[in-house]
Image 1: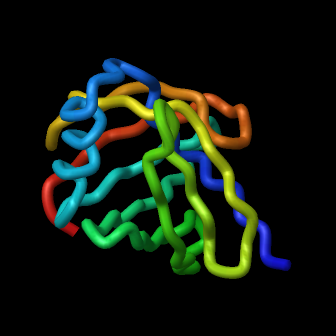
Image 2 (image 1 turned 90 degrees about the vertical axis):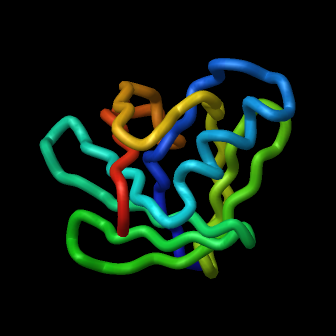
Length: 115
């Protein structure tokens, strides 16, 4: 079974329903860039239908699904295992932040305009 560690994390900023939707809604049509401690970057493309694609630092594309589950965001790569981490609301295009990924490593995250 394929296993892919999604390092993207969304820390909890607010737990109200509308706040949980805004970061994801702002990500649709845009790109979430995750920078790892070694400087490598992954690019995440989220879609309103719950699907996503990740362009990994090695140039591979991984497809899968995501869902907001309470105060967490969960990722399931096609043929892989689900991983969850805390979710943050309130992020807009141009914002950047530091978080802990699903693998426990700290990453830098930014929301960029366009794909």
